[in-house]
Image 1 (cartoon, one colour):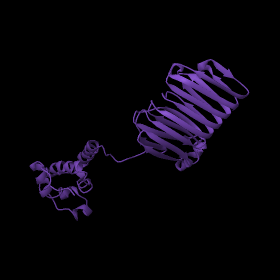
Image 2 (cartoon, rainbow, N blue to C red):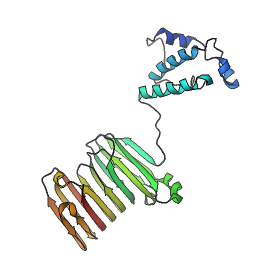
Image 3 (cartoon, rainbow, N blue to C red):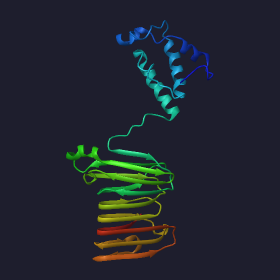
Image 4 (tube, rainbow, N blue to C red):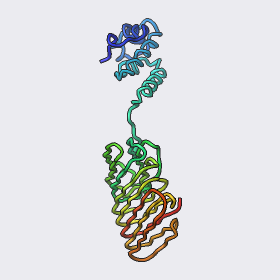
Length: 267
């Protein structure tokens, strides 16, 4: 509990605590029934200083906020200032979005339900998933898509569930990340990610862009479908196609697809 006795504050804050609430002329009838009038309009300024101090001590701001309708603009600004100072603005995620903190140069294992996914670099300290319906008629279904995260230090497991087949899902991760992806069916595009990659899919299309000089070893295989490795000068059609390629880089890439097309493009 906040206490002036345990912490030193300027006198104007102490006066704000001892003074009465804002001018009753500014209050609704309900508010006037519980708050006493204040003789000076300057009182609101003192209250604002007090509540900033309280906010910095993680105290509740709800008592003073919205008490004085004549000072709504100041109240809004104060709340923003306190939230920024604390770094504790209320967590809000837009619809069809999942976000969690994660450091650069980590390892992420994706266990994805069937769907259309694009992986690309985002900010250096977050994993973000956003999804949109393939058809506007399926917008309501998007609420049923769930994302689960298990993060331990520099390792994360991300799992999706729900009607992901009806959505296009964009995944943003730190650029320097090792990724493992397991997916039964759908399309996956990986672009701009620097790190080791291990991707295994049952059916669909897999497209990965790469810079050959960054890789030490590349293994790619398709049981039924086309295998296009233009970035490495390799192209094969038909059944049971695979190849191994060795380079001078530091990353390894393993891509396995049972049925579909696997394409390795130069970045």
